[in-house]
Length: 103
Length: 175
Picture 1 (tube, helix red, strand yellow):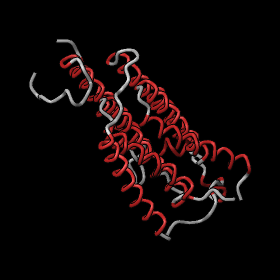
Picture 2: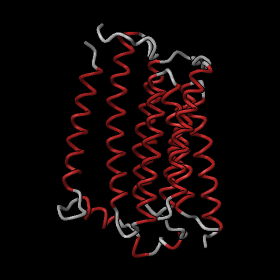
Picture 3: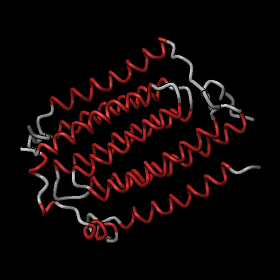
Picture 4: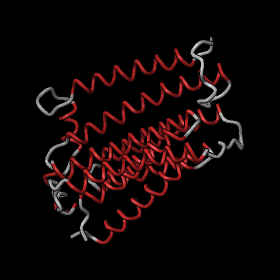
């Protein structure tokens, strides 16, 4: 049995679909952020797999993934700062209770 | 032809990724879903190791599993009450979520299986010694300004991280 390119793309497809589902159904801001991380991670896997199977002599997919990981870290830190600030103002991280921009 | 160990590793990791990513978005306790996300991220790192990207796997574990997950756990502990459970989903909302996810899966799976340009070669054919990614190659590519070298993005991302540090402090500080 061979480990083909498909066998790596299908788990990442499932991971991405889970991220979409969580992003739509979750009500907690942090849970939404977790779903977002799942989607980003699925895309990262795809970059690396395409790099390895289609262009094995190059490193572009790997560097793209590395920069994506760095930017994801920055984005998460900022998002969590915003969420904590929202929690201080509204006393909740539920998206249904965050409905005014002014406080 | 793939070695048995590689195959077993692949199936275990694929099962972990699939099961835990489903559990991470369906679990009603938020701290548990952060823990399941940790397993997914570590599984991804193992996939990177298996594909021959050791440096990337190490970055994944250090930045994602080490850094981002700790941030998540901290913010969950700061914002959630203990024994806090999210309420059950209304069937309408659940249906919308599943429909969106399935639409995405359908389109992408159709694109994957109808596209014939993929090679059917096995992973072991690509893991040759001239394709091996050494630290030397990575350092050269990150520190050069030629074609296929990445000094500018490297510097840009350092400025981005600085801006992000300052931004987080400004946003989250007490007034």
